[in-house]
Length: 222
Picture 1 (cartoon, rainbow, N blue to C red):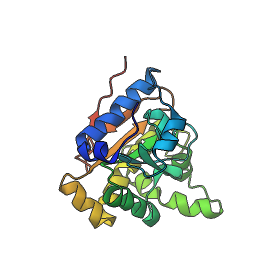
Picture 2 (cartoon, rainbow, N blue to C red):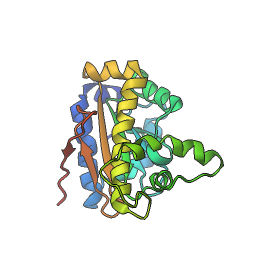
Picture 3 (tube, rainbow, N blue to C red):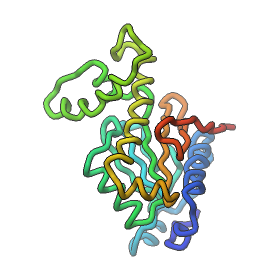
Picture 4 (tube, rainbow, N blue to C red):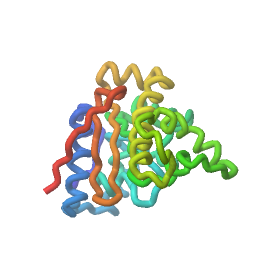
């Protein structure tokens, strides 16, 4: 598998960049990972990097973006924080990745059975974690279809909150970064949401061009 060059990156459209992630997850799930010479990629990227995507995901040890999307060194930027929330530092990182470094797609990736989401559902208080979990509360409050057992013991409630958190994070990216919003509107980059299933390894993507009302994109697995 070739290391991404500036020319290869420039030739990609946001749609094609999204397809690379979808195809990579298919390979991961089917255990058909590309054969890469990682040490060679270390050498080939020593003079510069040209990633095609930036993925915002949770710190959960099961959700390494490079692994679940079957990508090599120099292929994607990876921003990780509990609950895959967005703040000014992450927004700045995304702006660098897309405007300066040329990435073509932003992925907000939630996952099933998320501990941070469960903590927010249970209103956990623990030093600095309290501040982080407050950023997940809008998703908890936005979930109105479940009236009973609105806590981590209710797996249906947890997963609905996790999905809403992805949606609200996508909206916040567009709201808080005029630069990225302009790039999205002009089709310079795509903004896509997804949910990683820790039981199956499958990423269920949302429509990259509909951040307000995500539509699921099926990922076929052999």
